[in-house]
Image 1 (cartoon, helix red, strand yellow):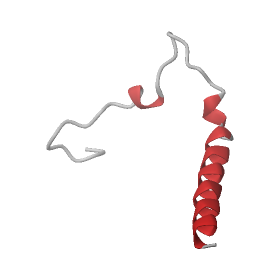
Image 2 (tube, rainbow, N blue to C red):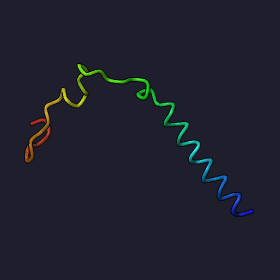
Image 3 (cartoon, rainbow, N blue to C red):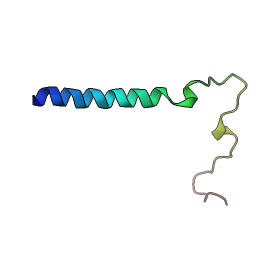
Image 4 (cartoon, rainbow, N blue to C red):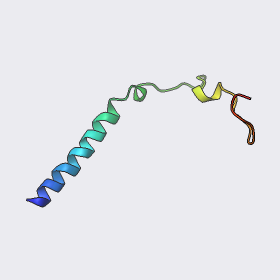
Length: 53
């Protein structure tokens, strides 16, 4: 009985995780070669600098 409960819980959690991952809207978008990534637009801070300085 305990083994079946453990199997049901673990498989149920994996099914829930897969279902939530497959519902993500960014899985339907495939960036093209000319698309700019969202992080590439912002200048990156150099080491030792404070953000916003």
